[in-house]
Image 1 (cartoon, rainbow, N blue to C red):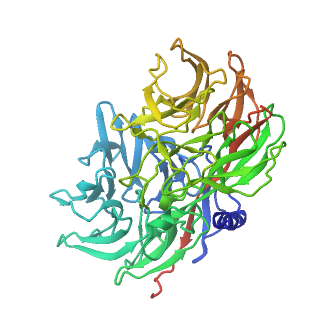
Image 2 (image 1 turned 90 degrees about the horizontal axis):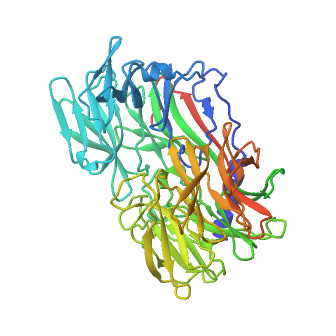
Length: 610
């Protein structure tokens, strides 16, 4: 009941969110925030952490990440891909250099690294290609850190020398230069989940802690120095040190807000409050800029034949699964993509539905615990549920904290308090599990711990259906040209798997893999920007999948034997993760309305005293 009340309160707040717009037409007024840019991505979770940075002259915005970086002209909202690329063959990242020039991470012929502008040309700098750099306002110095190598600390370099600060107490997540280049302010995330703000004097090389016990996120971001040089803006989930137990609550009030920190005494005050995540503060000219997320998810149901708009079953749910064998319940995950506690707050819930797939009960938890839990899959006889989890025995502060699992678990379906059985111990970014028709095997896709990231393969776990004990685990060797599997689904007949392969950044392929002959045949190539999901109809004749239609993810159906696919939905939002009811009448799926926004606020000429 506690979870339900929190969900209802959050939904009411989200319903009052402001409408989106692309480019603001209002003039900036000191103290009044204005939205200057917005877009609605056709993705699932991938864009939640995308952020904006602003050129010193306030005329350009860099927005995105390595998979989709944009250079936007602030005045018009125009995306300038040509200027972003410059004379390089490829560009994967960029930061602003001096007023509005660009330092680019990319490739030119056989050269790879960070390139700096030199008149009309670009020259390769000495900054390591795997570093996250930021140049001083005049471009004479550069500070960088390694986001995935915390032991490297921070490096500050000028033309004549290089300074290394290898022990700042944790992982560097953000930095900013003072206007005159004499100071570097650094945000450091510590393994216990708290962050500190430190400053480094370029002349004396002294490191001083300005503020401790900050409730910041563990991922790389940005901080902004106020024009008066006496305050810094930081995204925090609260004014006090965080409690790890609260991080794991699905709808705890822990969205990131923008705080102002006094550099003289470390005092902090709320500057930009929000009902959803606002983060990545940066200052250019007279303005404070930040990025805002507005992500609404729900579980909806539509007729399996399509042709009718879906109806909502659950607000703030994702990844639905039908109960088996009866189909009288729908399970899903809830908690949302909260940036300060990424995935720690995801639990699985369940709701009862009638023959028309309408909800007849309120949501109640079905799989809970510390760290991420995904939607369970019922065994064909309904006695077991299997699910992916990052289960940890104690509250942990971050997604990658030591002691967390990343595997497939099993539990009695009718025993919420029954012991979890861990079926695997090698997983890395494990996907949802699917049961074989005889209830003796589970298929799932995963990277292999210690292997190559991004290479996901299907695995089969054979279990004892009476005890739930894992008897053996086998990796499926895929035939060429099938190179990997993001998701696999067992056919109702049991001798085939439907496999979703990621072939390019924004393309997928759907395959049928025969478990007996070990052969695979491709059904279709299609555009997709995320995990669209796949599901069989109970008769085994059709596969439903999520793919891109225009600028939205929608549901499609294709015969198992091959042929033309048919678009089932034409929704204004993104629809993905289909699950077909056991009687074949209904398709449940995730519905996402997502807005990524860039805001700004004109700062007073002098900051008010705390």
